[in-house]
Amino acid sequence: MIIKQLTVGPIMANCFILGCEDTRQAAVIDPGDEAHRILELLAREKLTVTQIINTHGHFDHVSANKKMKAATGAPIVIHALDAPMLTSLSRSAAAWGLSAEDSPEPDRTIADGDSVSVGNITLKVLHTPGHTPGGVSLLADGAVFVGDTLFQGSIGRTDFPGGDFATLRKSIQTKLFTLDGATTVYPGHNQPTTIGHERRHNPFVGENARFNG
Image (tube, rainbow, N blue to C red; front, side, top):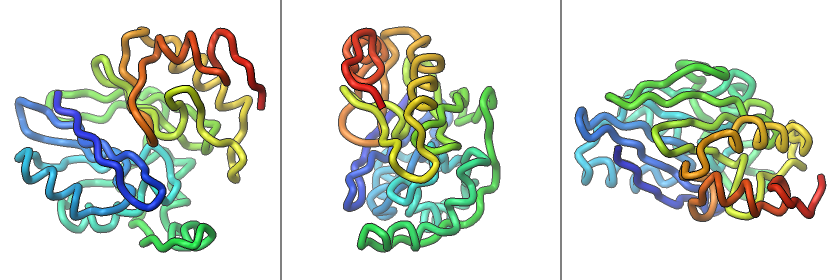
C-alpha cells in the first residue's frame, strides 16, 4: 500500500494519495487545491487515479475536484449529506476571503458500511459526522483517513454550519476509538497520529478528556 501526503492550499489541508502497489491504481483523498502538484506526484509514482474521494465537503478539502476529474476522468465520491456543498465552494471560500472552483456533482454517494475499491485495496466507509453532517473516515489495512474528524491532540471544529460537538464525540468514540490502537490516523490537517495515542491522550475525547463542547 502506497500512501503519500501533500499539504495544499492556503489553509494547509492534507491531500492523500493511496496507491495499490500491485495494480498502480490510486485514490486521491481530499484534493483541496494545487491540482498540478497532485498530478505531478501521481506521475512520479506512475499511478492511475480511479477514485477521487472527499472525506467531507468543505472547500479546503475539495476545491481541486474539478481539475482532478478533468485530468483523470475518475469519479468523485462523497457522502450524500455533504454532496450539496460541492456546488457552492466558491461562495464558501469567499467568506474566508479566498477563491475556489465549484466542484462537479458527485458520481457516487457513499454511506456507512459501504466500501470503495482501489486496485486490490478495499476502503471501508465509516460515517463519522460532527464536523459536517456527511463526514466520513476511510479504513484500510492499518490506516484510517479521517478528514477533519480527529487530529493529533485535537478534534474537528464544530462551530461551522452542521457541526455538533456531541455528535463528533460519539463518532470518534464509537467508530474510531474502537479500532486497533496501532492504526495510523491520517488527518485532514497537521501530522499523523495513532488511534491508541488519541484514545489515551486526546484532551477533548480521550480517556482523560479535559475539555467539553
